[in-house]
Amino acid sequence: MGIVLRPFRAGDGQAVADLFVATVRTVNARDYEPAQVAAWSAAGADPARWARTLAGRAAFMAEVGGVVAGFADVTEQGLFDHLYVGPGHQGQGVGTALADAVEAAARAGGCVQVEAEVSVTARPFFAARGYRVVRAQDKAAHGLTFRNYVMVKDLASDGGGGA
Ligand SMILES: CC(C)(COP(=O)(O)OP(=O)(O)OC[C@H]1O[C@@H](n2cnc3c(N)ncnc32)[C@H](O)[C@@H]1OP(=O)(O)O)[C@@H](O)C(=O)NCCC(=O)NCCS
Image (tube, rainbow, N blue to C red; front, side, top):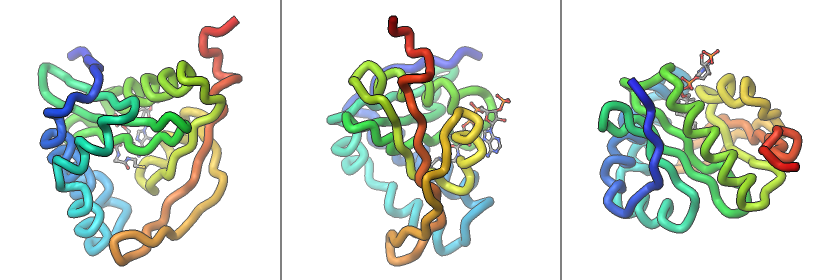
């Protein structure tokens, strides 16, 4: 089934929150401790907060067969802040489609590099897309520490359609 990308809309906050919680609890749960999963998912359960966060930046929803399958966003500064694919849509190209859109938006906005704080779960996906690890960190969040990786990708050398 085809993957349709569209911009995030104000009414998408609930769908984003639901997908985020479900993905962290099932997909990221493979790589993080139960207490981390509980704190991480709880921190992303508020639809209004997602609506506020995503409203002011390039943010994309992916749909498959009319069902929300993932979302991603990037700030004006080139921070690739979120990329989450729903548990039922893993491994079907949704993450690739969203990351393509994020990188294209960053490039169109004049960024020469994108940076992401990448989970243990997503590191192989980002590495396969040409992101390199700048540093591994144990980041304090929600009263716990979370292993993640600051990863960057240069966009200028990626053949963005420029002259
Ligand atoms: C990482 C994630 C976004 C990838 O999305 P996806 O839709 O499953 O990815 P795709 O189907 O586009 O996969 C693209 C390629 O990456 C590979 N890949 C994806 N996740 C992978 C993983 N965890 N380990 C190894 N390879 C992986 C796929 O096999 C595929 O390779 P191929 O093109 O050779 O077949 C998704 O697994 C996810 O939502 N993870 C949990 C949330 C998360 O951690 N987000 C990042 C927070 S920083």
